[in-house]
Image (cartoon, rainbow, N blue to C red; front, side):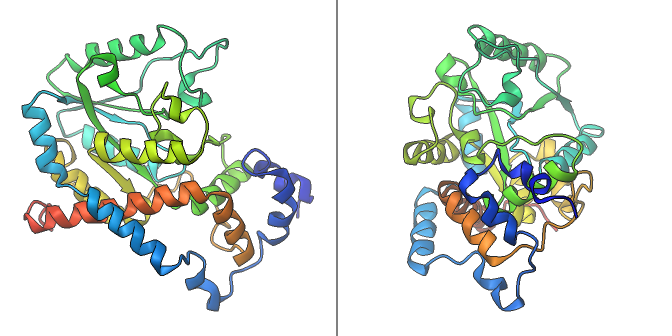
Length: 323
């Protein structure tokens, strides 16, 4: 076994150093079978509150998208997937790549975008705002590519939400996928130990906080509420890894020209970034990580509940893909 300092090094950039030793002492201990159902326990009142909140914000995503396209507040020829790392994005990329071979879909990556006072790419550095003029360059790239070839343009990137309407541009179709934050942290840890590249260390909640928003300067309760607002108002669909079948069914229902057949791919999971050892963690490790990621946990629970509520609305309208 490697020395503890080598094993725990990937966690230093993710967690408070005060807690590193405690977590690493427990991270390889198996979870007792009697504790399996308590790992993600939340008081029933809190769960009901999240469910009620999601139900109050639920909508039929197909009807809303069609209404927005008719009103010309959304453009159907441009889809942005600002994918959250370690949240099923590699599998989703595989699905999109397969579909692009048979659909009228042009699947590309965005151009290099510089950050202020550095030559680092804003696509990966997590800066709140790109350098002056860079965001306009990005939007111009989208507009040029979307107007060519008569195909829908789908662009994916590890990027904060870009609010096109604030730039006086017609908004594209937005979608994303997220996962349980504790599972994501553990996946980050093992990916950093055994994976081919260093993973992004950003909170998945912050991917939904707009560039340049004063509410999103730092992670906190205000940023959480802004991320939830953007999720409800701006995104056509946000999938959840733990509910991938429902996620893909919603995508296929609202964008059948692009995603027809994707719901049948739910069981095909990419093995590229599937690292060993992630399933055997101690109860104490899980509890510590959940406490450290309380805001992300609240965002995740709201997102998952909203997905399932929207899925129900599509089912009630008979608009889900036929199985």
